[in-house]
Image (cartoon, rainbow, N blue to C red; front, side, top):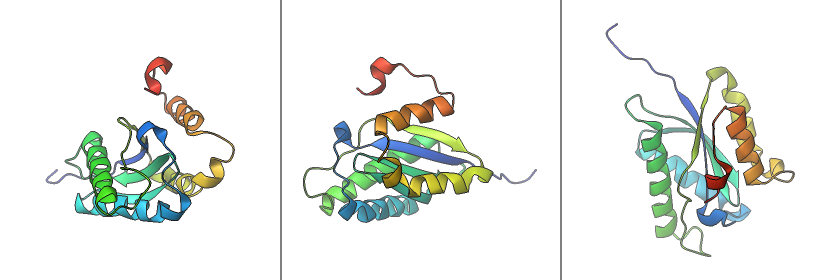
Length: 151
C-alpha cells in the first residue's frame, strides 16, 4: 500500500489546577474557542469541546504522526498560555492540572461522545468530576491506584 490512512479519535479529559472551579458559565465559550484554536494551530482536529467549572472534555482527531500525549500537551499548554495572555479567566492565573485521561472512541460512537460532552452541565448536577472520571476509567478498563488519582 502506497499511503497511510488513519482514523483515531480520542475522548480526552483533564481538570483545572487543583480542580479549582474557574471555568464559569460566562467564560466557558471563550475557553472552548481557545482550545479549538490551539487545536487548529497544531493540526489537531477538535470535534467537540465542553465541560464545567473544574474540568474539560475534548473529542479530537490527531494527525497520524502525533502521539496523543503530544496532542494533549499542545492543547493544554497552548490554551493556558492564551487564556492567561488574554485574561479570559480574570479571577486567577489559569492553569491545567498535570495529567489527563485519553480514551479511544470508535467512529460509530462519535455521536454519543459528542452528546455526552455537550451535556456536561446537566450531567454534573448529579455527579462530581471525581465520580465521573473513575466511571470513565472503569468503563475503559484502565487500571489506576486510588491513592495517586487525585494528587
